[in-house]
Image 1 (cartoon, rainbow, N blue to C red):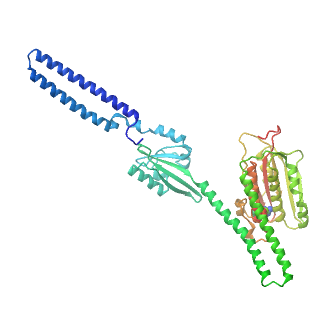
Image 2 (cartoon, rainbow, N blue to C red; image 1 turned 180 degrees about the vertical axis):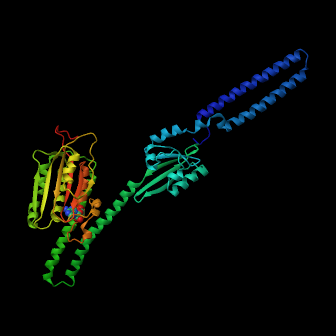
Image 3 (spheres, protein in one colour; image 1 turned 120 degrees about the vertical axis):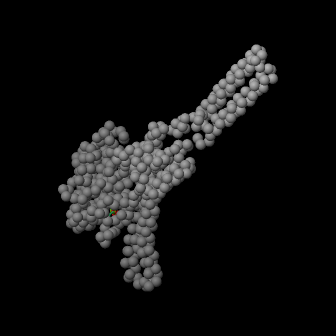
Length: 461
Ligand SMILES: Nc1ncnc2c1ncn2[C@@H]1O[C@H](COP(=O)(O)OP(=O)(O)OP(=O)(O)O)[C@@H](O)[C@H]1O
Ligand SMILES: [Mg+2]
């Protein structure tokens, strides 16, 4: 576009030139005819007539050549500026077709066009053509815009803009073609940055969690080889601790593998039709012995009737297991853990039953269900309630983050890696379900999950 004229401009220049040549030839012919008449009638001599004709022809040629060389050098004379530079309406249509927030700034540094995404981000509050400096707060972006206007440079520039503690954008500033406006296209880098940070946090946490038991193991091995070499009585104690640490490591590895398996199958929707009641009974089977050993009563109660669900059986079993094992772990002796589940008429109803039962409690939705608008799908809910210590309010938003343990700060002796709830959250997301917590300090905690029930016509929708 910056390379000379367009095909249209060239065509119109060519036709202007041929019209001019035709006019000049007509004029010279008329002049020659008048001279011929004057010579025939004896008004002038032959020599004067030929000289006058030659002078007229050279003047005409000089004028023609002069104007003909100006024409192609000055396309703006041949082409209206509006033909080269899109007008505001055309720009607005183009910007609307862009999937990214984009806006244009004129040479007075006023925002003249923008698409809907940009309007949302710039928060103009009804202001028309505001100055860029009153809307954009990033000095880097403002100076890139100023620079583009001043130099008129066509080279696009990219500027990174931090617009919040956890929000980064890349602004692409350019002056497309001959346009006397500067185009700014915004690209959201936040998800990419967040994912990179989550990945590095995850690696740091995972290696820390693995190193702790390994350090303990190698410490005991050294002691048993060195100072306690002959103290066979201490060996039993050491071996028991070592076995515990090994078990902790293998549990951690199993959890990590399970998380990565769930993540890698995230785009494959569950297909199997399962009975939720069977899932719960399979999952709770092994817990009666553990509960009895701890002196905790495990009560399972449910609605009547079938509860068909499209689910990944092993994953749903893991959800029940992780929630019940937490409830038992944090229960006091002689406490009670109640697992209740049932069918609700819709997702909203299921969410209430799973996570909003106590009158005065701290509540948080850890994962909102991805419900389909306009459809009233029946839903299955489950609630695991305990009478443990409860969880302080400030910890609630972080439950479900990998390796987050609320009781670490409480200095509790209860061990764990902080992956159980992260696994539950992932599995529920995979099943288009929701996940919430409700807690009362000193009285107990209840975790709830809900997900769409299978359709009665048997289709896996
Ligand atoms: N029923 C509960 N009562 C009180 N606190 C709880 C309960 N369930 C979970 N928590 C808190 O949430 C944190 C995260 O739980 P999560 O199940 O993810 O990890 P964990 O139980 O510590 O380890 P693991 O990976 O072995 O399950 C726990 O460390 C604990 O602080
Ligand atoms: Mg747990």
